[in-house]
Length: 424
Ligand SMILES: NC(=O)N[C@@H](CC(=O)O)C(=O)O
Ligand SMILES: [Zn+2]
Image (cartoon, rainbow, N blue to C red; front, side, top):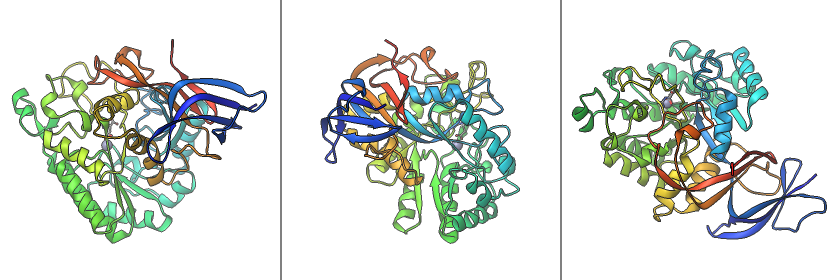
């Protein structure tokens, strides 16, 4: 049976909101702007905005191995509540998807409990230990969406270079968490002014930028497609910009928290403000926004990284890095940047749906006839206060608790099925 969404607004090519309808048949978009087929089930869009379901290329679902933090079920329900219909799961699980056997095992878990599309990464090295290289060709053949050791930087240039060469041979994308271990200095937040005020050890910006600089040169030498995770510093933005100018095949993502917050916002030694990379200085935040606007940074990814309340209870030293992101990303960015005219709605949707799909060569992130019916209906006027206790994620670790934001997803449709509906 067909589903017919009526009374809905969609962005046209000029970025204007226009009234339309969407007809869904067999999980796919069958028609746009046509009248209701007989017998169709009707969804009343209530005049709201319909976006392509968001695509997040950097998420941590924790299962297998860390189910006390999150499971594939809770993580994907959280993603659906945030409007995400395709998410790429990072490989820092136990076991790590470093072999066909482990990858197949994880694919089985996803099949059993995911409510949105989960595309697993393969790791670059065995156990993400940075030593023995994984078999990229084989893992790609078995469905690894891309390759990363996210959570840690690949320390040895030769390891990265050789994996990039192998990736280039089969058209795989190498995705890097850039962090030089010799430059972390035991830091828990950005090395700048605020860490000194709080008496906490700092991570200098160069810890990230120096590895991006290495990697873009390796990618050039290897002829590889290279994507930088969670860019956080102004030097990183400049390095990516220069690399693009030089014709190197590099893309980059930025996280909502790095666009919204800076180190001086950290109120106290509170681990809900601890993530990797850390919140940087005001100039860095500005450079990230400029980087998005001038196309240096290609897309937005949440880096959804749930941890337990116990792990995050007692100050930054000793707590794990990471904050949750799915359920607050769109409203926070919409409120801060679209309502104020810094971004257009079309830009935000491009960065959260269309561009990530494009750069990861995925056939999603667009509303068009024949595409999977992955749709997010958003009430752009609805204002709500963020309450971490309402999250579908197991994680409560957010610095945004208590923030007011506008533009909440009210329904998420994945392959034609409603996977999230706002509770009345
Ligand atoms: N971003 C984080 O602070 N933490 C991530 C790892 C990562 O994305 O580097 C995690 O897995 O917890
Ligand atoms: Zn990372």
